[in-house]
Image 1 (cartoon, one colour):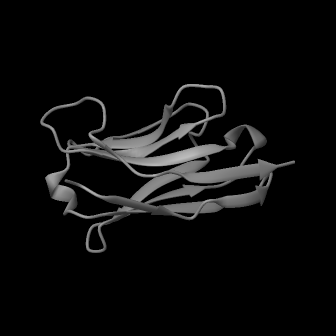
Image 2: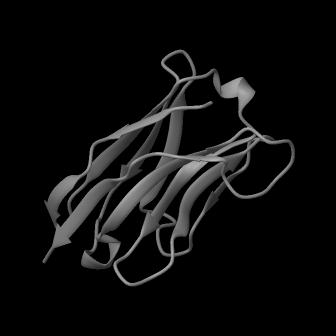
Length: 119
């Protein structure tokens, strides 16, 4: 069972930056997908940035150019660098991983970390 530990959420003024971290309990090579999702209050959970087993990173249109997904294989940690944050980025952010073969929904979710952007 994969375990995900998130950190880095908080409150920031619009235009500011935050970096979220997600430490994974297994080697990245055992995963077929890894990424960040968010859930804005009253809305469904949506993908923010995710990378599949073929190495291509997908970004949601709303964050493209502002958020960057990166990883440290040795530390088994994935980062989401968020810049030029907007109040509409306020949400609970979840790290998610997939071990099952092929593409599809994540198998494992982190507990979530709150990001609040105030104007």
